[in-house]
Amino acid sequence: MVVKIYVSGISGNKEVKKRQQRVLMILDSKNVDYETIDITEPGKELDKEFMQSNSVGRDSKYPLPPQIFNEDEYCGDYEDFDMANELDELEKFLKITPPVSPEDISQDSKAQNNDVQENGNTSSREPSTDKDAATVKSESAEDRTDLPNDNDPLDGSKPTELDGGTKENEEDKKKNREL
Image 1 (spheres, rainbow, N blue to C red):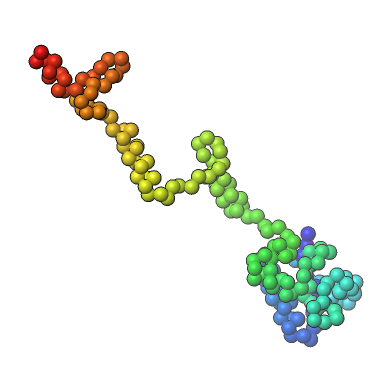
Image 2 (image 1 turned 45 degrees about the horizontal axis):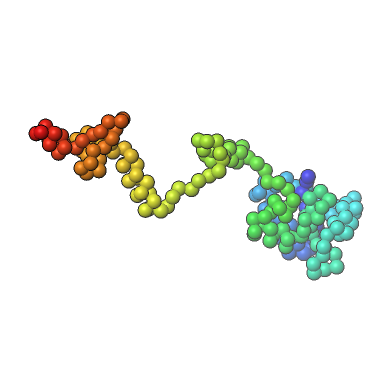
């Protein structure tokens, strides 16, 4: 689809000339492919008729250039174009899809790869910002890695059963030796 800009090459209206130049300058800066149709050139009477019958005039009886179309589909006039440009919705206004650069594709695939987790799910998890939860997690990790010493009783003075046997604390061992 080609964006078509209907302009007047011999307009005496300075405002029309200024608006036409601004539209073309913005389209060039955004790398939008377009075709300029000068309705004042000889042999362009059908184009002029098409523009006037398919455009909407604002302040005058006839719509003034520039008028913007995507192929034969009317997009709007200068004021509509300018508003879309200000709102950063020019592609939507022109009814075109924005060009996709190789950088965009590689960035999208990197973002998707970062979302994939060990189990293969693509759902993302946000890190916890709760300081207490982080403290509890780190303390529990320390508790799990801190193994009891054979000489230390696990719960004070009671013997602990391990592998079907019993473990006595140091005081019980001394008492048994004395007996």
